Image (cartoon, rainbow, N blue to C red):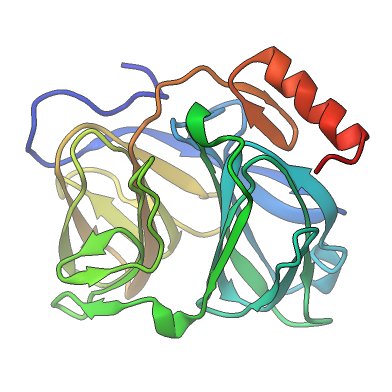
Length: 294
């Protein structure tokens, strides 16, 4: 069972931790400091996920230069803001400011050039960016930009003080605002008080992970070591097969994201901001960018 295809096995059952991956401190854009969890040597990809970055600092020098104009082709980016404000602009006329609790889902498709710049000079900037691959049939689709404020993301009380914010997919009767039939993503932001238990359905066959960004959460059996946040932690729990997930809060107010999606199982040709299926398509992307065809 490979890191890029963790699902499979018999239908049903609770998911357990397949392995843990520690994030790698790095920088991107014009020097923004962040932690790279997917897209680094320990976990180059998790089909269909290509990258997961966590950014979070109250030092303006760590983020103020932002992410100036840069291109993408062949995949989607998902930016989820926890604190702070970021302005998006692109060469297709889309523009918006993403604030606390908001999400931006951008389909790069056949090509987009955009910038993501902080809308603040001080204070904390915190959130996640996730890259999700597109199937070969959709890689050259028209670019698309979606932005949703926190009021568009359902928040469900789940018992014991636990809460579930639905960004994509479904929890109970609540449906997130973002739909993508190709990968059928599930993206939940979870709050678990001390000793709160939460059982979540996770589609069988989906690649799935849990990332704890505050406190500590036990995944599956109570005897399993908790996945923790905090200095030096930054651990992703890669989940094995099953159709349900049990979480147990191990700190007064633990926060985590649960993300899952259907693997594409297609070849990947990837370099920098382009993700295609063949080397020829990758070279064509660079040529198209050079001649201004984006």
